[in-house]
Amino acid sequence: MKQSILYKGKTINVRVNEKIRKGVCVCCGRQGYTQLHHFKYAYPVAEVRKNPELALKNTLELCFRCHKVADAIRQLQEADAVIINRLNNLISQYK
Image 1 (tube, rainbow, N blue to C red):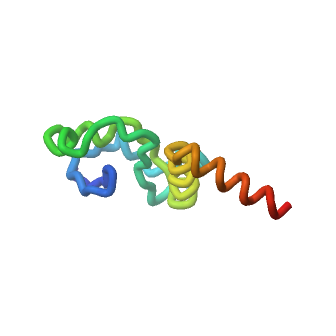
Image 2: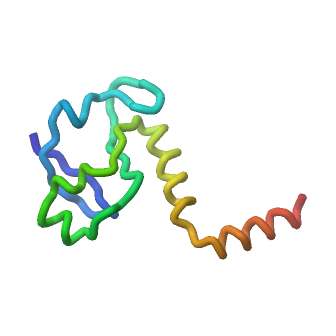
């Protein structure tokens, strides 16, 4: 079965089966609608378009709530250290 998946904001059509998508969040165990979360984007979009199966690498099956938290964690991990330090300094001024 083909499904679309977002990879770096681009839609990729890829074959997905019940081994990949079980409908259970691997974080909280909630059953039902799940999404594949990329915890790492290891390939350029052009390479993934040529080989769509690469879009399934480095993914976790998560419910919507856990996916939102995982996205926030990934964004923090990718954030510029200079910005993080500046924000921490600004926040500490208000304590």
